[in-house]
Image (cartoon, rainbow, N blue to C red; front, side, top):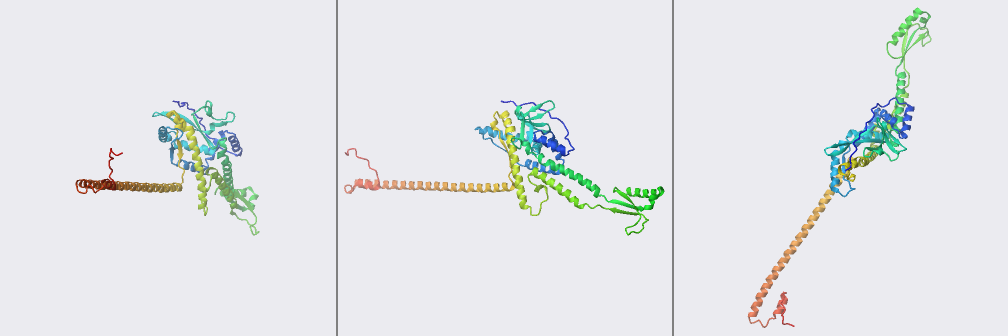
Length: 455
């Protein structure tokens, strides 16, 4: 039997890079599109600090993890008993080597970067070889276009995945360049624009959120240093009264053009309420676009508009189809790159590996199928009842036929007995010469033995 690889590669320990600007984001995306995920992995970590982006991603992942999981028996081999055993064993140990936290990380990188790589750490437990899955952080992952293989970096070496069989599994959202389907390419600029709008809004609020205090004092106080100290004391009192800026204006005349020699104070509020709507609309648009990129729809992340029932059905249908596509991809990779090696090392034949299957039916589909199963069960019961009644009718008919045949045989025996008695009486009586016994026997259907002396 084949032996599972026992080597285990260590990953780097690092902290993701922060402080993203336009140039760094563009550089990370350019390298990502070239198959280098070092910076785009850090960028994805930064994107998920946004509560809307992280909420959309977790909503998509939670919807997949909550689905019931079963395993279908392999049909590749004629050994149905061994295939059934492998199916039952896989159902027992799947969550041991692929628990929910691991699957959550796989989905995270698969959605955000378009590719997720896991290391299969083979260990022997209770007489079985189990591939304990370890998600490899994509910061140490890239695609080598010359050797046409993914490579991972360890503290001591660079490992080509294709050259290390049964040790790695690659979950991908495409065949040639799956990383081009990563959500990071679509949401990064919206995230950056949203952060810039928050910064601009904060600066805007700093200017327009605090009214200016305008202190007025007699202009004559500026004529000498001694009187100016009185003006400065008044200014200090206004400054210490709060955080709003203070402007001191000398006053010679009042608003009516008359001489004004007294003190004054007023608040001047900037008018910029209309500009707030620009920031709000921009941020809402960025949130909506990011939700669309991750969830494929926006209704579950936004307040429901009036008359949204029909629209909600459409959005749920889109999300449901995406969920089916996600589970099909997971099932295919899980079968070929995880369960087939597991079947090979434990049963000696990778063809025995079962297929994982997530139940993606909607509640309406489950209800409809349950009703269909009930109707089918009733139909089968009706057919079985009709067949039983038909068999009963045939049995009763045969019973009646047998009874009729028995009655006919009894009557025949009775007739033959009387005939024999009659023949005996006739042969010994006066009518013996007048009765043709052979004709009488033929009339009663009595067979006569042939006389051997007859020609």
